Image (cartoon, rainbow, N blue to C red; front, side):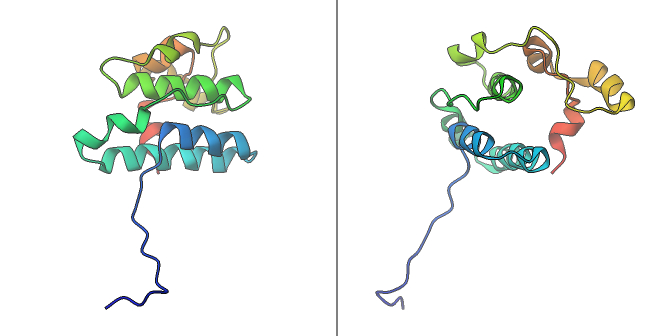
Length: 130
């Protein structure tokens, strides 16, 4: 039996718009990556019919082009018909999030096509780390 003072909250997975909000407010790079991995993990656990709404609507710009392009690459990788807003978010100079030479070489080989298209070089394996 519930008392009238109890609040029941239901779980809601993070949306792409929510992720953009976290990235725009957070300055710690490690925490930003944790938000990205959290979003990807929540996406993976959602039933197939509840995954597309997580990408609904264009996310606000974070204020940093590299992170804005990362969001576009994620959206394009996970959507059979990428949203139109992803087309304009590309980098002229490739972004290698890792400064380690070995990770950069791995990213050149294993970066998903959607990421390479947008100029983000990150290994698919790194996207699975949580």
